[in-house]
Image (tube, rainbow, N blue to C red; front, side, top):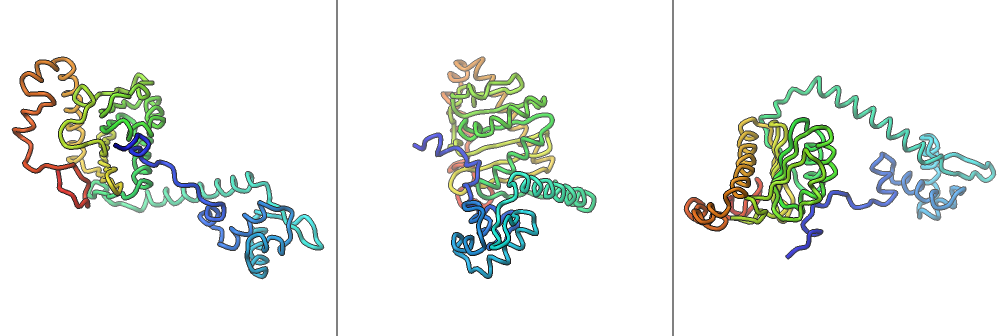
Length: 296
């Protein structure tokens, strides 16, 4: 059986090397390597930087000129010329402000020009990073209610975001598989509902699925079995079905808590009589669009 750490989604990207990170910020390969080399030895000449970075000296001269033009480094001696980094915090904060401003401008422009009907599509997200980013956005954008159903191990990594949502008066309801849910009870607007009253998995395995509905405007179903993937939709009829499903999960949990013994006596433990009567033959694990396994 996998541990909690194995089941929990990876929500942080693996740490990149400094040159790789700088390349993602728009530095050329030579600029990134020269900057990283200078960060380990300063002040330094172009020759010294080339030696540390393992680059041809001619390429380093051009990279240093570009870095100086960016305001990332500055010379401090003349003969020979030695360089140091400009205060990194100030330099990268300036990039951050400029990038944020550019992105805000693009978003503002696209809001005016893009007229696509989002309700006409189902988006497929593949990989832990994409699924995590989408789910994070749904939680951060929620304004009225957030309902999640899944195992505690998949919900707990988002506890901080869920607390933030509750603090801005979003009603958060969590239908959980598992019993260790105390850490999710820290706010009065967060309701933790054990699945079918006891938090145990009933029926096909569901410990690798996460279902989310937000503000009656969007839904997401994610699978963490094998390759992580998720389906997201804003179509009103699809969202209605998912929210109705989650509401009935809450109703059923309260019925079990109030009348558990009578329900078990009439329909069997874990509703086995009803499940045996109505479940389609050969029903397997629920899957996401594009999965090769049998549909639920």
